[in-house]
Amino acid sequence: MSATLLAVIPAPSPHDSGVRDIAALSARFAYVTMCLTLVWGVLSATGWVRRVTGHEALRGGHVVLAVFSLATGVVHGLSYLFLDDDSFGVLALLIPFAGGGFARHAAGVAGLELFIALAITAAVRRGATDLRGQRFHQAGYFAVGLLAIHSWLGASANGNLATVWLGGITVLTPAVVLTVLRVLPPRVLVRLGLLEGGTGRAEPVRISVDDKKCHRYAICQAEAPQVFQLQGDGQLRYLRKPGAKQVPLVQAAARACPMRAIRLQGAGR
View 1 (cartoon, rainbow, N blue to C red):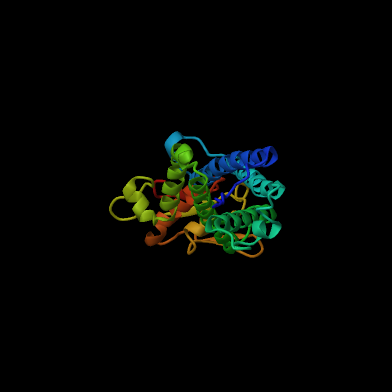
View 2: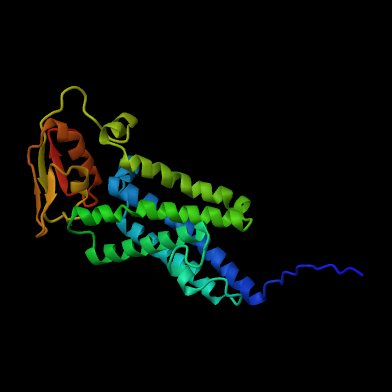
């Protein structure tokens, strides 16, 4: 008499089902606000909102979105610690690939930890002082990329890819497009019509900076490092009469200044 062995997979408990529902909901909120954080940050830093609408993009909105995205992301990660099946431990949530974790988990852990590090340094620095700190802040693009990979791989593994496809693409596409545009040289942006460029010979330009408006964010230095230099003591030094080759970079710096502290004379903005 032969016996047939059947593998029985127990149904998840109502408690675990509720925890996973919370994890899924918080993940979707985190994903959407993460993409919006990147979009708002680029638009406010470059001044493109003002060029299109005539109004400034408030940098405070960027901060609010970043905080909400970080909070929901942390909730998403910590919720797995409350599962009864012990499928996730503390080490698995803190160290990528700990305990033989999947690549999607590693991308999520690394992306969230980098996001937290960026938020802490931004709060401590409060946007001031050196170019090195701003370059580190730009690692946020990499963090968003890791978290987007984690989100899509997780949706695919859980069978929810078809459900989140439209919404995911809708918010991810502008984030990707703006990220690409953000790193393009100013001359390319002029050709695309996103920046105004002069025709023929570049006119001489005089630069003046309103000290009362300038908050030393060092964004101008990132755009035109040979013209603007933020010193260790917080003082901004700049060339009042930059060379012709620097004019497009100076114009980009003036548009990127969130406080509109840079004034140019002799060339159209």
